[in-house]
Image 1 (cartoon, rainbow, N blue to C red):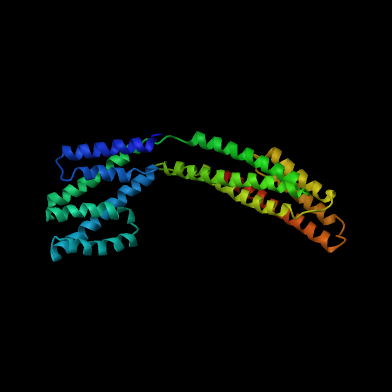
Image 2: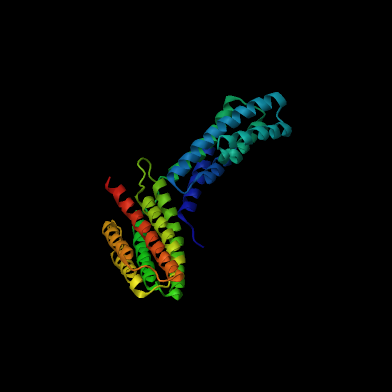
Length: 318
């Protein structure tokens, strides 16, 4: 059984929140620990937003409860009416996360049958200790920047492999299955990398580092284009002279594929190949026409693949 960092931070935050609540002689001190447990998020910003929204939610809950309980009395029926109003209001203002915890805190007003300032202060101190200790616990977040750079390297190796499989798969329908498997693995790997990049971005307090998130988004767009190209592989069956240029283009891209390759030279090569296709003799029959049309579509998709990288590189330069 593995105990993760978040679990350790949650234990520390909850224990200290409860300890300080007892030290301050607050009523219902264990509630501070429970609030801390519910407030330790995956990232610094997620925890900060949770803290803010829950405090705002407590203010709203206290105001609604004050009027309901003072009009209808401190009883279970009044609490039901409170929930009938509080839940829709929370949902409307997108404060859903505070519904459960603040409904529990409102029961303290119900139990004490009072809205004296001491009781209201007690509830806000419980909330402050819970979310405050959660924030302190989350001040430390391991920097996963190095790990994300390793993810970049792995992804680029997988792209090279996929591009090589596409090259060998031209005019070889059976080879398309290997490319499909590699593509599926790459899509899944990119999805996980995007999640990590988002987490890294959310752990920056002031200036968000969007470099990794933008990079993985760009690569995901590219792999989806390659997936469309793979779907065409088993439909292309033309004479070798017509696929030779396309195979060379894919092999060249595989060899030069990397973060620093802006793709501009590859666009020039694509333009030259497109010109060769235009100068080639017309198809002899309908079947040849359809196959060459698919090959041209294959080339157009690959053009979009390279243009995606060119646009990414241009945005980095600006």
